[in-house]
Each structure stands twice: as structure tokens, then as C-alpha cells.
Image 1: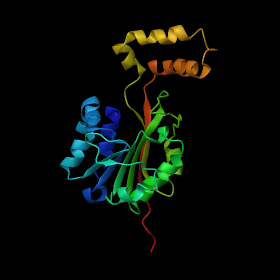
Image 2: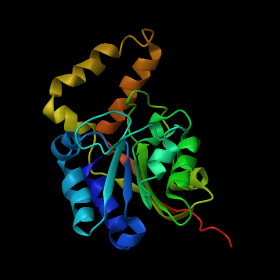
Image 3: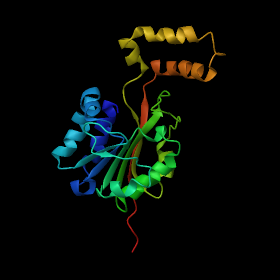
Image 4: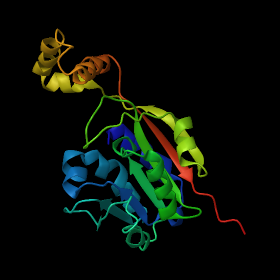
Length: 223
């Protein structure tokens, strides 16, 4: 999560009443150390302000670790009843859709978890290099494509966000990483897929990363 992303999400949720948000389920949360030390802006800019308003936050990941409240696979039918038992009214689904083979299944599962009237906040890369975690399908949707993915949930807001960061930041910290691209350039015939990814990454020396962010409301049950 980028700092600009955390700020955008907090602002997105700021005007929603606490009773619409709480409990909030943070899917793919990672550990407390990750949220508070490795990416401290996630805690400072997003989670702390939400808790200060009285929003209960439930952190879910598919592994154990400090600060993970539920160890579960959100796509597992066997784990679904245990997740729903927490009765979350909203979900954070941040930077996950590009790491699953079937994003449409994850989108549908989010709606099943929060149920009718629930809220789903989503972020996903729009312009960002290939990154494994453990896979990256290169799913890079626009707001309109996200809206189609999460239908019949209604998109309350959707936009493409310039996060103000790029590959330049990594190069400033470790200038020698540019040598990887220089040495690899003459050899496209060696692991061509990796060569293309390496050359493509140079695009972000001159262009900022961008993400797609959106907020969805699951339709209320029809009487």
C-alpha cells in the first residue's frame, strides 16, 4: 500500500457512518509489523483514524502472524462461515485482485461476506510493474472494468490515483540496479518474458505509478 493510497482510502471512508463500516474486514492484511513498521503510513494514515472513530478492524490473512486476527482463505468455502461469523459490514480489498487467478470469484466472495447493504473498498494497480506475490496476473483494471467485475454491487466512487511514486525512488536508493537493465538489454533471446518485464520497468523511471480505487455498495435485499 502506498501512502497516497492510504490517504485516499481514509478520505473515502471518512464520511461513512461508523455503523456502516464496523466491523471492517481487512483482507490480505499481513502482520502488524508490516502495517506499522514496513509500511507505517498504513497504520498512521488509515487504520488509526478509523479506530479513533470507533471502527472495529479485523485483519485477515491466510497465514499466522502477530496482528492477524483471522487466519483463513477468503476463497475457501470451508472458511466462509467462520469469516461471516464476525459479521463484517465493510471490506478492504487492497492490492489483491492482481494476485489471484480468478478476480471475479474474489469479487463475488467479498459481496457474500458483507451481504446486502455492505460496503467494499478496493484498490488495485492500474499502471505498475510486474510483481510476484506469489503471482501477478497483470490484472490492471480501469474503474469501469472494476464496476463490471463487482456487479451487481453499485460503484459509489471510482477513480485512477497517481500515487506520486515511481521506479525512480528505488533507483535513487540503489543506483546500481540500473545495471541489471543495461546488462540484460543485449540478450532478449535469453528468457524473453523476463527481458520484456525488465525493459518495460524503465517506463516507470519517467512515469508515476497509478492505482485504481473504488467503493462499492452491495444491493439491499429486495422485499
